Image 1 (cartoon, rainbow, N blue to C red):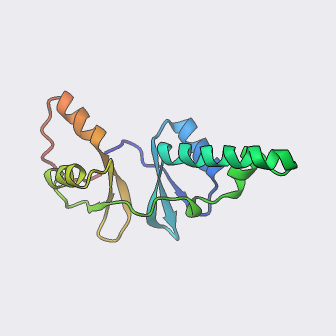
Image 2: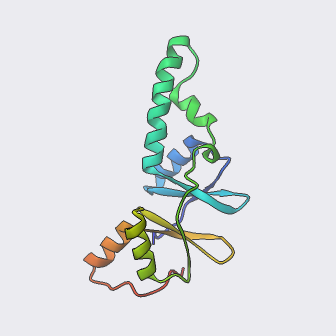
Image 3: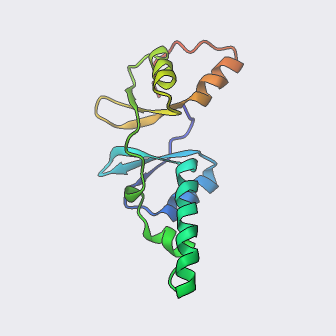
Length: 143
């Protein structure tokens, strides 16, 4: 799991997420609504949204309406967040998490407590790092 967890409220803007990703060099941000995990915004998601915004900006610029930065400041994360994120509990074994990543063909799993509190994400990259380091990940996801 990533060392440091970054979260933003669903009311934060795309600009806020971009700022956090640039300053902290993280690839994903957990999105919370009233303190509860609702989804994730990844760098890839942000790039996709940014390309749509650029396209809209080009059309809007011809009419003198908006810039990409203005649009990034308007759209809330709640409107673009990926809410379909596979989740596991902290009690889930690493082997079970690996199977989920493999068979569901996803890049990440949100790790939650029984109360639904986000404690981190486990990714394909984590398993590659553990493999390179020669560690056998047999533990459970605890912080």
